[in-house]
Length: 576
Ligand code: PEP
Ligand code: MG
Image (cartoon, rainbow, N blue to C red; front, side, top):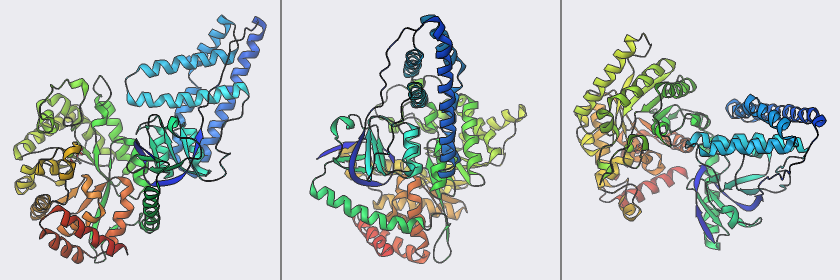
């Protein structure tokens, strides 16, 4: 048995036999051609481009009717590569100059393009190499008159193991016997990952060396939730996962039946279920899982893996897209939360002994109003395109909130001076993730439009446990009585001031603890999209009075373990 850990690209568990899909390599050798043959070679090239274009449009149509418009749009990028004048002209001019066969010339130009992209240090552009590769291979295939490799040989359900998968490969899985897939390559933003989520095929990517370790026919367990892949599991592990799978399947069906409905308790209390995102293109998954809005849009990704800072226009376009896509539902944009474990090379922040307690999030933004206001202006400008709200991370007291709001006012004044439109009444929330903010929630509530509890940080600060340190991970307990008391204090203070409280930390997505949070009066949950159907199911299966009683009981317990067990037992009763 071998266990590997990669990046969970699409949730769910799958158990099955591996099917290795080889790398599709074309061996193309140079062949001299005569001057007279040049027009024929150019014609061959043009025909291959036309054929490839037809194939992509056909694929797009199939995907658009089978999966949706957005997934089909991924292939727009492929069509753009096909129309790239520079690429086409380079092939034709080299063909004339070098007098070599067009297949060879094209494969050389393609290699050059890819090597240029590989040198660019930008995660997004790197992922686009897959697009160029995908189209390039299609063109080569058509130039060589080869059949495309397919998943047609797959007679029984199997787990695909491949070095990489192109979006076309992934799209083709739609109707095939694919139970899951794992790849050596890939990141969270790869189109392959996006497709896998839409198709709800459990997938783990970025699992370096997996193709070298797996043979076709090996038994694999793919856990897309945790990113774990187990090769040839021992009997006990297999049995545990099989049991888990049966359980998950049964309940998933029940959950999905309610995903499109609002979450209302049996006695009529409506709870808003939102999703957390980091990238604009997650919007499709958010909708697919029945989310009512976005409760946390982390914006740090704009700044990552690049040397320069994003422009106001780039921010604006992304926020506008998300606002329009989700409208009329609300989208809460969290302003830049750099620092802690999120380092951004372009700002050259000095190394700190305790980065989580250091110059991060709102502290950094208040010290760098140039960077902060640029983002605020973009959020404000995008606010006319939908229902946008904003919130500040890591507020530790009222003074920080006031300073941030002053800069927000300056950003508004600047837009007014430039005659740019924005929603002057945009709601401004405070993330409660520092214990001092939780303890002074009554003071903050008077000047905030809403709260969102960031438990990922709140727990680490409350319990003095570094959230990223595996040695003290056993102490990181969301159900710890101290954490529950802080949360209760925040909810009570907010309700006293008649403002709503959401929770966007991972704790909100733990179904058993959701019972306690509901009982404490939490108004909104913001969770990873996949958890939404389950949360909706639980909420609609229980009365508010019952969860209030559960919360009361839980608050009397003395340890996190006791609370956790108690909540789990209650959940099992509900799900029976
Ligand atoms: C949190 O701290 O709970 C939170 C949602 O923010 P992040 O995980 O981005 O720090
Ligand atoms: Mg946080």
